[in-house]
Amino acid sequence: MLNIRPLDAAFGAEVTGIDLAEPIGENEADALRQAFLDHIVLVIRNQDLTAKQYRDGISLFGAPMLQHRAHFRLPEVPEVSRIINREKMRPASMWHTDHTNHESPPKATVLYARKLPREGGDTCFADMYAGLDFLSPESRADIDDMITINHLESDNPTYSEVDRDRYDNAVQHPMVRTHPETGKKALYFHVTKASGIVGMETEKVRPFLDDLLKQAVRPENTLRHKWRMGDIVICDNRCTMHSADPNYDMAEERLLWRIILQGDRPR
Ligand SMILES: [Fe+2]
Figure 1 (cartoon, rainbow, N blue to C red):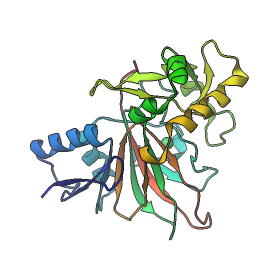
Figure 2: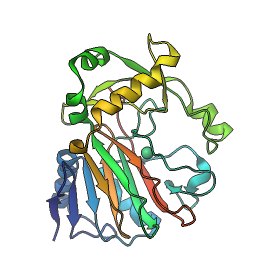
Figure 3: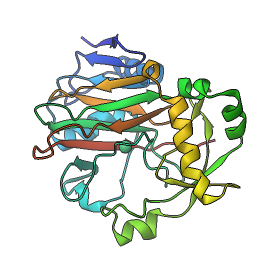
Figure 4: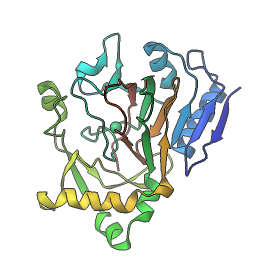
């Protein structure tokens, strides 16, 4: 039976008693979608799925969208992309929300553990509703109408020329966005993709964003997920940031299957 239990943490919930390989009833699907909005991160345990079952099962939360870096897509299920500590891919250890170089970035990121190091390799999440509240009154006033300008990182070797042609278009987003389903405001930026801020000198942008992160990410609004095989974690990208902890033996392979779900244009 479906069981949704708050984690022993500032936010997040653990989901047990479902098998995403099987059809999910409407009532259970509604409960999961509501839990996703309420808890902003869900840890779904004990899943043993093919890539196709994973894509089809997780679609109850929304429509999977294609990710840049075509090289990392699974050929047989292209909506599933590999996150791996191989092939020049580096752990995304900075706090960020995903794919802000898209006009309509993904509302959710979903990660499924496939190969784990014996120790470490955790993924951390931060609640950005709370993060916004943690800002000083001065910072909060500064960012109220601020607009970020988003690019693919110039120093990331995993982006192809096709990615740069197609997905690097100086997309603008509000720094404070209103969640389209909950109506609540959240701090919203990707620290390395937001290489510009409208009206700010370029060299001031990164120190400014780093200072915002310092204020907004605290122990009391973060969650450290220690992966177990079979875990699927879904986070709401409209009100969370996440980071990968690179604190593990890189000789060991770490592989997650990632799906991202289509979102709205941030407002
Ligand atoms: Fe990410």
